[in-house]
Image (spheres, rainbow, N blue to C red):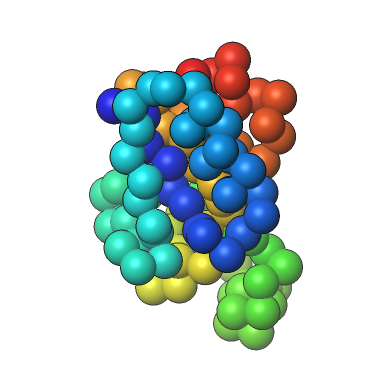
Length: 113
């Protein structure tokens, strides 16, 4: 089943959700701010995205700047930062089978589905 890691306060995420709704495909909405992914779930998502942990971080977020910017962190520490502060996770993430994309560019979402 298709999943979208969604933040309802984010315009890009809402737009991506509309594309999913219009696709008439079955999907699951995961409001990751209310239900943060575990470290294992994030590791799985990263593999599907083919990203390193730092590539999934929203580095302009205040929490990142105040607590992590400029520090040398291991991949596990970056993942743990996202688990503890899910606002740091780039959004929206669309997962289908063993693949995933960041759904900010809507031109990529429809072909992905």
